Length: 235
Image (cartoon, rainbow, N blue to C red):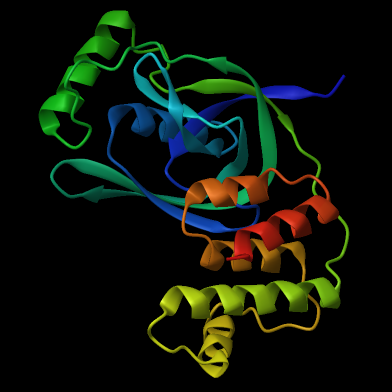
């Protein structure tokens, strides 16, 4: 049996890769509760891309593969009421085995950006009991890391495909290969010893849609990862 554990889940409109940094501004009561609980525990929660085809008690539902985010810094910021600024770094990816719904249903016409919306949620939370979790949780199992090396040949092919894609997308403007080398330099992607992190970074600057990146995150072998990258970068 694979070991599972229960973690808080934060559905976002982005994909977090292992070892990638992710700063977040937290202003909704349910996610402030999530951060408070994490700070009292091991500082970890799951980041998942929003599944646009489903919802849980009216809230955004997560895709079933995500990445553990570890909080490295948390500070209070006063802007129109208290907000939290957190800095996180991606750890392992995981697969959701079972979703644990939040204790409260999203109210009709809920505005997550308004003070009224926040008050409404806090009032509902007091009624159901402040010990109840307002955020989604899930029972998850960790996905083993791909521990193979990236061959220089595969890396060069992917960089070549990325350049072709950017040049084609820029038409009728002309983008020369030298400018694209400069972009790769800015993202620290000039290397003779590529690792899986280089592939994740190249995917991030080559994708137009987070759903494309989700496919990259879900790859479990190097062959599958390279195949999906080639599909992502082929125009």
